[in-house]
Image 1 (cartoon, helix red, strand yellow):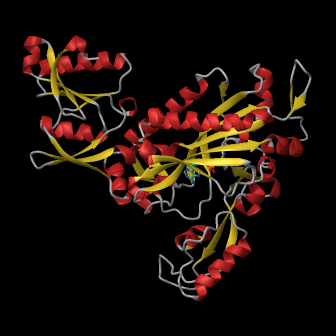
Image 2 (cartoon, protein in one colour):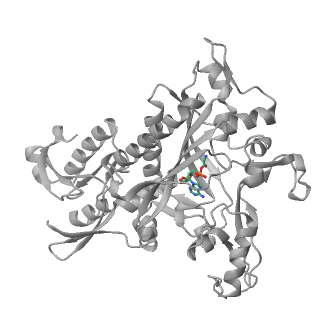
Image 3 (cartoon, helix red, strand yellow):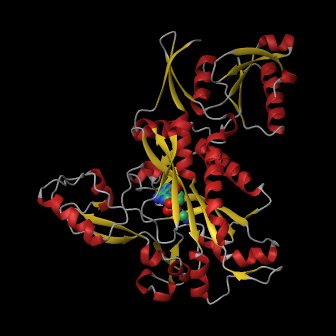
Length: 464
Ligand code: GAP
């Protein structure tokens, strides 16, 4: 059937409703009214996210110079003092005095065209006071106009281990849920030198959960309090970092286009004017989200972290974090080029780019998830025309053979074939296979393409 026009999602509500209806993403604790900024991935969402993660891991560790790590979430709390997170991992926030709603001051100022990213609190309060005196700021929840001053709000999530009850939490039992996954890469740097016989330049990659006490929680899975990072730290002599930084920018952007299929025109680099406490240079890969009104938002950061982290861990642990060159005997602390991607953000970007609403020549509309084929949660849907025993036997055979060759297969046996096609289009299944009564005679099935909707008779043995 001819496609007359095609469009993307127009806002976040449309994306959210699609993702929940089709089993990709659900709000956490929905039956209790929803838990802010925490999300669960349903069957299809979890498979899609895993496929993105696996593709990232493969792209990293199939290079012989990058090794893999899966570290624990808990670490010695001194790690977070050394990393600078206890002292400087802050966002400025202020509260509405009427309803206690909390706002991120730099984001509010940004709405008034004021760049307060990483600005000192005094400067932020000066801007806020001016806007407050003109009654320009209004609470988004209750409409109130009376606010507290902005304060620093540490993003580390605090917990405790070892204290028997919450009333008795001892200072020494305080732990932090990791605010970024890369710190445990630095903690294991020496282990890799010893056990993996690597020498700079080399990298360590890992994927895992990170936790942040985000103040504002209204951007769906883009900004969550529990999320997954895919981080790679590349250790090298200082003089190599400028070139490596450029190389990694290129490598990562190529991966985003080729593997995630995000279009070139929706992607860009945005250099940081103001740097985080650890960075000597930083740029973001941003994607233009249709659901956020075609605004560019950060999906990955590429940072030159210098020798900040290893030096600080050397200072705080008292352990030598230097590499000794076996040839020259030279000792030095390697510098780090970091690539730090958000798995949830890339999953959201892929969904945002793939959801396509098409108007067809018969006046009907179809929603099709145009995922790159290798990311589709289901590779093939098999549909018998009826539940006839003979057809079901063939369906079983095809299913088993496709599963044996590594495919995710779904059987869809209810409703008209047209309705089943539409269901599979919505979850992005690239091929639907229909088994009908002619199959019993000619050993052929109908294979239907998700994007063109074209159908072809194919011999069963030629399917895969
Ligand atoms: N180790 C460096 C680091 O953590 P970052 O810019 O704070 O740098 C890196 O985070 C990436 O992690 C971001 O580009 C984003 O994709 C993801 N990320 C950060 N905070 C997030 C949050 N609250 N929710 C979801 N993803 C987040």
